[in-house]
Length: 281
Image (cartoon, rainbow, N blue to C red; front, side, top):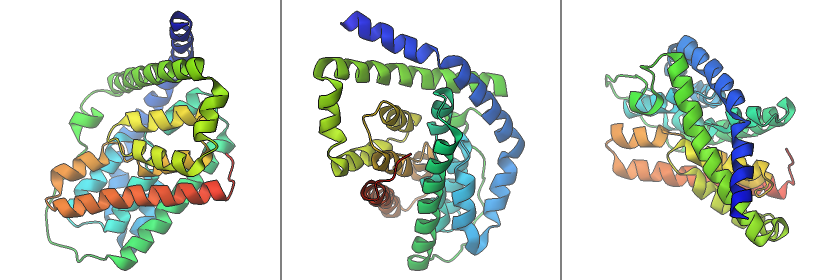
C-alpha cells in the first residue's frame, strides 16, 4: 500500500511540473516589469488604500506583501491598507490551480470573494483605527532572502517551482496515505461535515508564514477534504512572507500580535459566512 501511495503521489506531482514552471516564469516576468510601479501606486493611494491594496494584493508576487509591511512600518500606508494586502494575497493558490486545470470562472470567483473581504475589512479597520502618518524614511525593497529577486527570472522561476513541487509532493503523499488508511468517506465526515471546525483549522494552517500554507489549503480543497469556507479562511489568513517581514521591520510587538489575531479572526469570520451561505466554487 505504501508503494502504491508513493507512486500515486509522485505521478500526481510530477505532471504539474511544466505547468508550475511556466506559470512562475510568467509571474516573475510580470513582477520584474511591474513590481515597483505597483508599490508606487499603493504608496500614493491615500484613503483609497484598502481598495487599491486589496486589488493589487491579489496578483501573486512574492515581494508585494513584504513591501506593504515595510511601507506600514514607516507609516506610509494605513493599517487598513496593510490588512487588505495581507488578506487578498493568495501566494501559491493561483499557480497550483492553473497547473491543476481549474477553470477560470472558479479561480475568478475565489479571487473576487477574497478581494471583497479584504477591501471591506480594510476600510472597516481604517474607520476604527486610523493612525497619523509619521515622517519616516524607509527602504521599500523586496526581501531578497524570501523572494530571490536578485536572480534572473529563469532561476527564480525554477527555484519557486522546485520549492512548491516539494511541498505538493509531501502533502499529496500524506493526503493519499490518510485516505488509504481511513477512507475518503470517513475523512470527509471528519472535516466536510463539520464546517466550522474545518474553517478554524484551515485559518490556523493559513497562519504559517510560508508558501506551504497556501499549498496545503489549496491541495486539500482540490482533493475534496476542505469546503469553500475553509478554503477562503485559510487563504485570507495567509500572508506568504508578509507577516515575517512585519515582525522584522515593525518595532511595536503588541501591534504585530494584534495584526496576527485580526488576520485569524477575519479569516474565520469570512470562512463561516461563506459556509453558511452555501457558496460553491
